[in-house]
Length: 77
Image: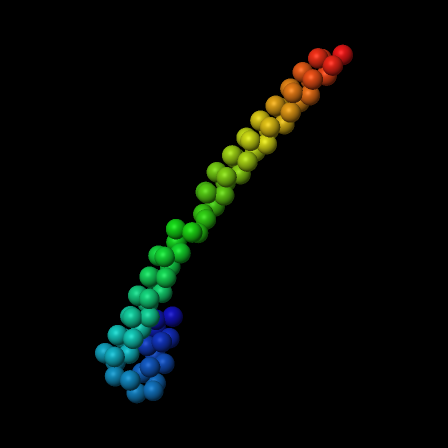
């Protein structure tokens, strides 16, 4: 993108140094925004880890529910 901005500015007769400064400035601002949001982004590794945790808790809860049901059934009869 930086090169396209630079070329567009050169086409409208902006001096090369100024065109480069503008392109660099835009690049820096984009990087700043990315850094602000990078902590909120989720990676594939994060999703895989979350999936494993969900599976563990689901299986654990199911086993606990079956155990509780079996215990209640024994006590009731």
